[in-house]
Length: 296
Ligand SMILES: NC(=O)c1ccc[n+]([C@@H]2O[C@H](COP(=O)([O-])OP(=O)(O)OC[C@H]3O[C@@H](n4cnc5c(N)ncnc54)[C@H](OP(=O)(O)O)[C@@H]3O)[C@@H](O)[C@H]2O)c1
Image (cartoon, rainbow, N blue to C red; front, side, top):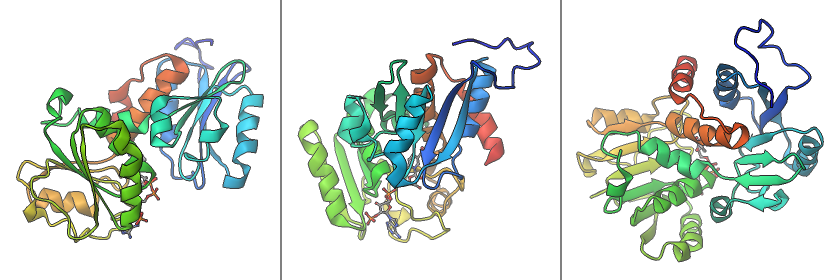
């Protein structure tokens, strides 16, 4: 891979050696990933570009074959492709297999497709940047409540269990989905106490960390079932949504005086891990964060 010197006046113009990265989704126009990766590639002088591709679900295998044929270095996947990519991979990272979804694909020079899931560790990396959670060796005795049982919840739950959380409850509108998620994971984490519960009433007493992975709040709806007064004063409220920066859940938690965190850190760290897989380089995380904060 060739580097572009910073004093090269054409450094920002793609040329015949430029390697392509991207994100696929349906829809994909909302994705922040190009804004996350392109500046980082440029700052490191890497001759690569990252684009967004709208890929319809029924054309996914065709699109992936095309990426291989074109010699792309790799790509990210968002809804609804993460699960459908699994059978298309030649090699799967054990974490991606456990989560049942691929969000990062690396394409080897011989066309071999390697599938990873960086959402789980992206979430725990971001959690470890939060006051009171900086040392993951202290997480074992803490109690976590995850709202939602969709694709993102699977990544978050696996991340937390891998990081040593032993008391974890998943609450979901469709209880059977939460039960299935934990039934799939329980054999891998025999030391953990796992519980699936309905969305109402929530078991909020004694919760150290509440993570929202549902789509509730995206359209401005209040999350009435999270009765803030029943949470301990020390609880951290984490919403993995990053746009809007402050969801109704986070606003209500702040009013109650609780610590809050949104999904921007998770987005950055899942991207950082993909960036490392594709380029071998460390993403300049703080510069990327400052730039994204300016865009949101
Ligand atoms: N920060 C990041 O890096 C990052 C990474 C991944 C995802 N995300 C975000 O995470 C969110 C979830 O994504 P996903 O892939 O997990 O979606 P998903 O698979 O479609 O799951 C959606 C979840 O939301 C619940 N839900 C939807 N509408 C609801 C309602 N009206 N009331 C109560 N629950 C409702 C669903 O419950 P049912 O099972 O009952 O339908 C399900 O648990 C998205 O906003 C996405 O942008 C952020």
